[in-house]
Image (cartoon, rainbow, N blue to C red):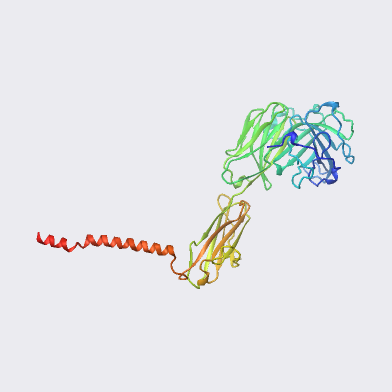
Length: 454
């Protein structure tokens, strides 16, 4: 669950921009609203449809408020080394920005800091058919005002990401000219930015947004290795949904003005082909924002070892085969170990050096299989009871999978106690059976005399 605004505690002021890590935002604290260090990113050159010739980054700071209270609010103390306009005082009545999970302590660990980027933004009509009805005039009206910005805050390790379209407030003034006053107009968020699933299971891709009441459209797009396709689209003007992925289901739960609207996507019985990036895009008239979610498919291998049991004649060679099947993704490692007879403590474990593997084989469901082989040196009677193990490691396994077999050398030892008891019981049953059959086939002498006298 995302953190509440009350959980976004402030940190002691440390002049903290010196601690800023590239690509990450550091939560600063001082009196006033929660803060996020950010990067203001600008692209230059290149023209329309052409890669930019350069990208510049400037340090920025976001002040995250709920509802702005006007001049009665205390002006926060700001770092002196930020460029003018690089402090963004953001009013977010819906609270999507306040759900960003910020570290509670003064010394957050690496990976706990959310990344933050802010860019200039230009309102424009959408160029997809399911959002065309939102802007019938096909141009951005002058009444939209501006300037506009869009921020992206990602706390993937903490399970939250949000993209927000911001409109600067020309009427709002700050006592500090370096501050840009802005209001969150559209926020698109997800509580599942990274998901893992086994094969054949249903997956829910979480996505929601906050915006003023009015028409909207939704697009879910899939991308993988440069290729993409639309999974599902919803036209909010006509109320129709276009489903391109069989079985895909949109959970549309429209909230009141300023409240969350749920547009999550359900994928049934996922397979390897579903792995990739899913982009949830929300279209409003002249505005849009999106969140990217990563779905990774993992399937643990099935490991079998043969032959089992392993019985070998003295001085004869032998081979073991470890079959590893049905795993995804591709990376898997196999190792062979030998433990001498009677060494249950494992102090004398040794690797089996003469081993090799087949190539990976791809199955119809997209999973992989391979065979690993180990050759045993000609066995001796003293090897009786040695244990050979196949160890398999894979990203879908919390601990390595192990399959073991015990070597039995023919004639190395006499029968065990269990074998002796089994042979005794078998002999006893056979003896009783023979007695019963003998009585029926060969009648006794008394019975024969009785028959003759008659």
